[in-house]
Length: 240
Ligand code: URA
Picture 1 (cartoon, rainbow, N blue to C red):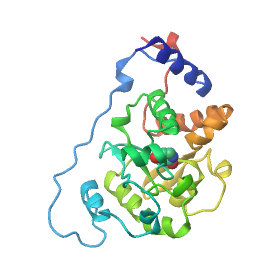
Picture 2: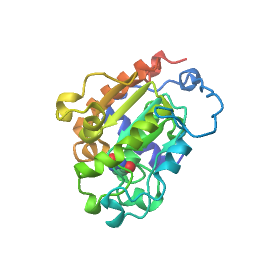
Picture 3: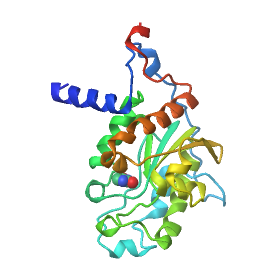
Picture 4: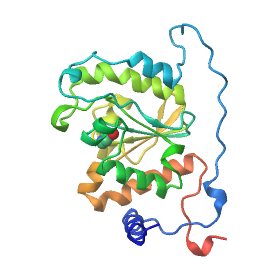
């Protein structure tokens, strides 16, 4: 790795309050659940669809006005369809709209580092947004856009069946928990979401503006690790 990248990683870890990194490879390893073969045919109501079927259902979506407001493409989601850990953000920004992948811009780079600080790679978790199309000028999604789009997120969660969902920011937390409480009130606790444990935390864009809050986000991510029976990075003296 480039020494500048190493220095940047260490700076982030320091801001997060990570106190050490284990050299023990075992805490990175995880079992990947093997899902049963998909059964083909028309799904009955309430049937759990595969991610591919959900993507096909979205199609070249015209269900809300965002398709007329300059979106380049639908940003569906990315990662392991059997992930135990899922991250949910708000809506794609300009970079995501161009690449068709969630969280690839500046906030996305921070999210990637947070995921790596937890001991995961981006390809081991699943990342999606409440809204699949970019709102113009990065405005907040309108309620009618949320109403049309959020069912697809709910179906993605039903399909993936993650053990832990990290809701990034107020928007995702409010959509999943159906509450109007601010993120400052919601975070710090674990909620049940359809059998998954939901942890609201600050959105990476907020953390870019308020780096002194990163330590609280790291507390939330450590909670997610504990729920997954994973060790947070340990003091070097504790490692093998
Ligand atoms: N912010 C989000 O909420 N989602 C993205 O995909 C990118 C930035």
